Image 1 (cartoon, rainbow, N blue to C red):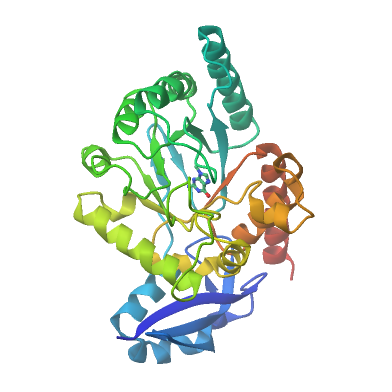
Image 2 (image 1 turned 90 degrees about the horizontal axis):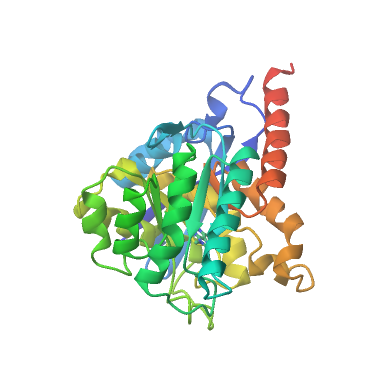
Length: 359
Ligand code: 9MG
């Protein structure tokens, strides 16, 4: 059976003077003037570039799925409700990464790790992060799983302290127990890199709540995912279909679609070429109708393209990918270097505002 995908492309600085020739992407700060219509039938994939002004006439032949994708590409995303905060999604927002992973097993070590994580979270919020993502289990390639009791013990004090200070906190976990305890402690959002596939009790926990949840694409588990990842077809379409299926599964489990944030999962079961293809094609994912989160900060692809620079020397590449994501309408960008990313996005936004007003 043929599948149709619509990828917004040919981004323009401003729609002024273009009338119907440019469309605003998902109510954000970018406009696109062409669509790549991708058709996939088994192993056959065809691609065609169509000006936005001609899409209306082409919709009947694109079927119901094409019509729905077109509507989703162009309708604004609602602001993200995060307890007492509401984060607007008409511009890219920064999510700061706070890892609470121990290097000591003494009680003093645990306390100082929590204190350092809390300080880091406050500093990121002050630097302009709209959300702080707190994680107690590393999901890096090769990382070993952590017992849920340890993970809960690591993240809970950090979540409680940041939430009490009025910060919107997300919790990066694959485990239902950790989700439940963190939400009780004040977390406003769940970031599950397994997209609710790791723990079959997660959907049950989330069904009873109203918080947003990130469903991220991955292939394999952190221990093995980077051992020669392969895909049956174009990675962009494979990830799109997988995310669509996970959205449907979450909705069927009682999690409303408007609570779901999607993420293509850069580096999770992907080689460098896969990651770059996903970055180049990111705007496609708006066709799923959910806010789009992108996490590429300090990832290996950057090292691979810069003489194997270590993670702490990947700021330039991280900023490049953050801007690439913003350019394609990603609503949430997950980063380590909050101050620098916020600054980059503010300058990017200044450029866009100037393009809108200069005539
Ligand atoms: C926890 N974590 C590590 N990388 C990530 C990414 O790219 N996206 C999300 N949502 N979480 C991530």
